[in-house]
Image (tube, rainbow, N blue to C red; front, side, top):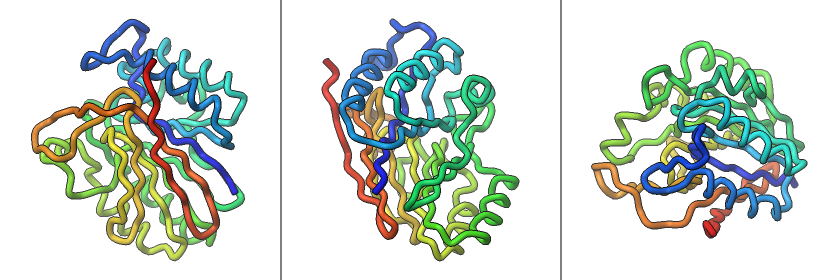
Length: 241
């Protein structure tokens, strides 16, 4: 049994005193790490939008806090991130083997746009990988391959999600997709593929209105327990103080 923590949408800034929509990303990240430090887990996955401004200073503070846990961790980029800076400081998570499942990381970042794209190269690599393995798969990508989202969110969604889902649907190894971006915890099966999204570390988005709104809810992360034939998930919320 392998235990993962999935933390998303931290949105840390170069200035530790910065506010985003009235919230302190630094304060909320520190609160998350205090709770995570008391968790029993094997791997910490940062599922994108680690930084809000792509600054070296913001990434360095995240790295210091994660390294202090003494547990292996990895990250993938979100639309607010700077993948080149992340990769320079700590290589992006591309592949991690667990006993029960293989974790693959995709980069859905698109320069100058808040939406995402996997792209032909990564899609081809994924198809080739799935054709060579029978190990159950976890796929980490910041932008979730989901429909039935609010109108405003569809404009910043994963534009080649149908191509991604088609490739995953070809596999007989029951892939599970781990995502962030929507600042909302969802456990949904879409086109036969299970998608798990993280609550936001900075704030929570409302998915019931076509215009952008946040909702009054505690920040959180996901606790995942991996088994060969199933992924158990818990939505963990934490106090800010």
